[in-house]
Amino acid sequence: MDQPIEEEEVVFPCDNFTMVCKGVYRSSFPKRKNFSFLKKLKLKSILTLILEEYPEQNQKFLNENNIKLFQFGVAGNKDLMDIPEQAMYEALSVILDKRNLPLLIHCNKGKHRTGCLVGCIRKIQHWSYTSIFEEYRRFSHPKSRTMDQQFIELFELRNVVADPRYLPDWPEIQWKEGMIATMLFDGGLKGLQELMPADSRKDNDVSNSREQQFTDVHDFVKHVQIVYLQMNQNMHLGMKTGSIVNATCKSDVQSKQVSIQRNYCSTG
Image (cartoon, rainbow, N blue to C red):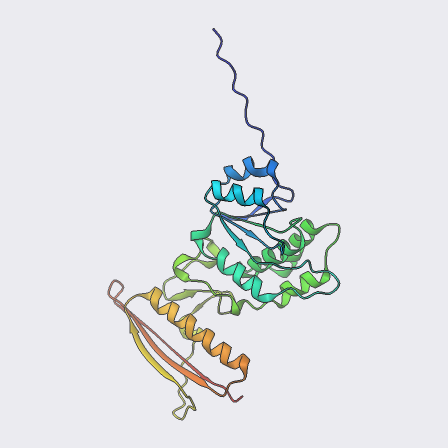
């Protein structure tokens, strides 16, 4: 007796769907017919850039499949409207945490807002502007927006916060011995001494001094990030404050010492 032939499940990818890089996908807004396809991606998270409340049927799908929802509302960049940078910074922090991956990024059509966020990812990955904008235009066709491309070009990577312990396994941002893999410093891998050069001046007008020792390199890096953000915040607020940091990281395993010093004086 012939065995009945099982019919294969038909799945429908979302419009404008593609893989951005390992663990990150992009698409238009998922519809009910796309749910079977999304299941096969084994997503841990969905990151949406829409302003509106997430639809009930989509929220139910997320709950049933244990998928986290991150929502950073961004208005469509029409009529010269500014894209909120803070939303993009927060979105990138989510994406740069491998605990949230695999992850799907979407807006409504998966073109402009999603394209801006993906463009910022490409900057982190050291893509050339030519390649970044070519990718943006390919997905935004037939209506590319100059303001979106300008936003990508002017986007400051130094304000993106990422925990080096949980950076994705992308070759562009891998941790290397003696180097810091963080988006806080121009989006690249640079030596610690180059990032935070020692200031040999004896008379340094500072209002705050911190000195700590660390036995774990990740705690050390996290400390550097926090202090750097505090200094940046003071600078942006025009405060007449400064901060000097002496941090030493000792690794018993490597039997090496890594030290950094950052001096900052705000003349406000």
